[in-house]
Image 1: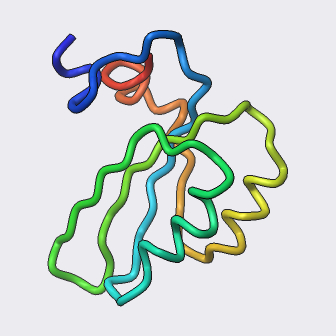
Image 2: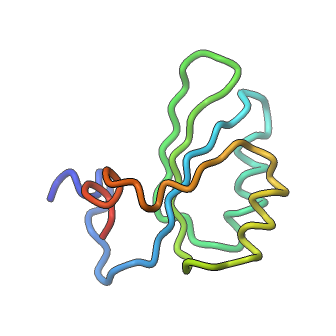
Length: 98
């Protein structure tokens, strides 16, 4: 179970999460833009950032939301960062999903 939730342990009740991978530009304000666009409207239940020393950093983020949330999709488009829905990725289901 130690690998299920690297920080904070497992949630007390199952979360309806969707997982996304993002490419963040390595520029001032990129994280703030992400938080203002998405984080003020939906609970971010997981956030992992990895820099590879290039123009973009990789982010893995999970949000508490249902399967179909058109407002969320609109906000993703407004954000303008490359992103992929990883919710049905078998590794996520095995290692991270509550």
